[in-house]
Length: 231
Image 1 (tube, rainbow, N blue to C red):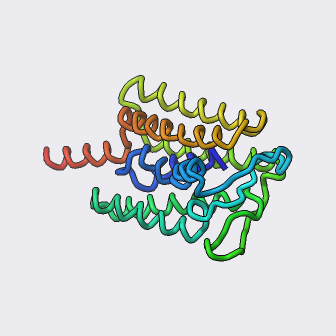
Image 2: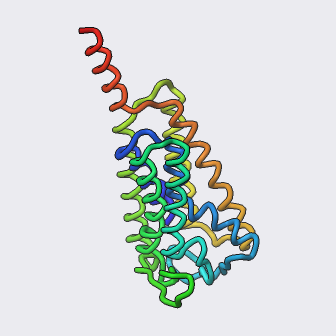
Image 3: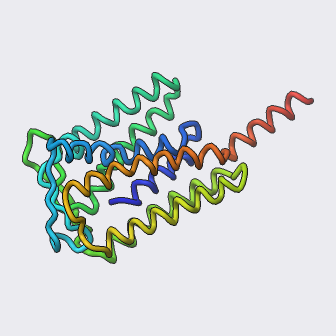
C-alpha cells in the first residue's frame, strides 16, 4: 500500500491536532522510510518479478526488521516514546505509535502472504488484494480520500500557500500512485531504494503544509478563552 498510508497520516489530525502533519506522515510511513535503507545496505532483500501480483511486481523475500508485526510494534513504541519525551503529549505519542503499527495492518490487506508476525518465525500472512488491480485501487483511493477529507475539514488555510501546497501534494501523490500501479516495473532494486528514500521529501512537504494551515478547534478554543477573559 502507498497512498493509503498517507491517508492514515492525514486522518490523524482529526484525532489529535498537536503533532504536525509532517510528523503524522513520518509515523504512518516509518516502516517504508527505514526499509529503503535496509535494502540499499543489504540487510533486507527484495526482488522484481513482473507479473507476480497484478498491482505490484515486488517479491519481498526478506524484510523482518522493517515489516514484521513484532518490529512494527517495537518501532511504534519507540516512535511514540521519543515524541512523548520531546513534547510531553501522551495522546499524541499514542496516536503516532499507532500510526506506525497501522502501516503493517494496511499492508496486511494488500500484500500476499509475505509479512512475518515474528522475525524468528516462518509464519507469514497477507490477504493478497494486490492480485486485483480494481479492488486494491478503489480501496487505497478511498482510504486516502477519506484521510484527506478529514484533514481538510479539520484545518483551514492561513494563506494561499496553505491551499496550493496541500492540493499540490494530493495531486502529486495521486500521480505517483497511478504510475506505480499502471506503469512499468522499476528497473532495479537500487532504484527502488532511492525512490523509497525520496519519500522524506513528502514528509518535509507535509511539514510545510501544516505551517501554512491552522486547526479549526484550536481557533475556536482561543476565541472562547478570549471571550471568557473579556467578560
